[in-house]
Length: 350
Image (cartoon, rainbow, N blue to C red; front, side, top):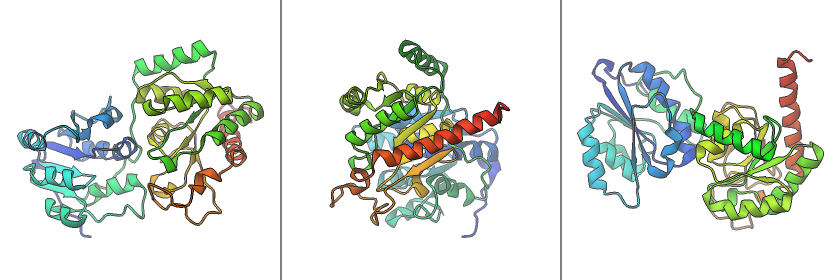
């Protein structure tokens, strides 16, 4: 599709929309430094649902984060709020019915979005959607390519603050854990059939502790605290305290490796350059995998139903129930060997 040239001199206020989820918002952040470079001096705001807004905390390329609650906030009030901002250009990186209406009514001269069904009428600059062919980062960056901006920044941005780093350091100190001397395991995932099963996680933690002589710290979200406590007890692993996203990120950042399901914390780890062993089943690692860091993708490769993208599994979730702990452990061991070899080379030992 032919590129549309936007008059950069007339752009002083920019709005980016990506309301959810945590991983999706994070994977949209490479758009921001590219906009900053392309429109120097312009203010850049971001519209996001309140629960996902912490992903954008401390982002150096944002002027303002506009939060809303899709369940309770008045759509009319949100429309009026956006119109008062007088944006020159909006980028709807979500393009669902709500964001399409917000874009259409924003009053912006340029309205960039993906023409899904009737939503195409909300945009005067339409981006060919490639979500089934390219990684989500590239999908987001296509909105910039459409207006002639060739991206030079592609790394997702997640900025840790000193308080979060100190929180992690204090936790490590109280548990007598050393920097890069432990493995983190995240038990969460966006929906049930993306989550590896309890007995497998417990067995993996034991294998890591015994085979690699590395303690394991179990990470979790607010809804998973009871499950995490049970797993840590059964596995003899350390249980992380309740954390914010940034506190969890800081604990991951100081670990040697993260083992995780496809989830928001997986993308946070990748943004923080934490080596990642990522367990996949119903989703595609090529489209939603950890972007741009040292990683191992682990799946039950013998299954022909991988990447089904289903929310519920009609055949018993074999991609998670049949993926054995020993298989994951062998891949984790391989990745840790690679990490340690890299450290030795950097230190001039080998």
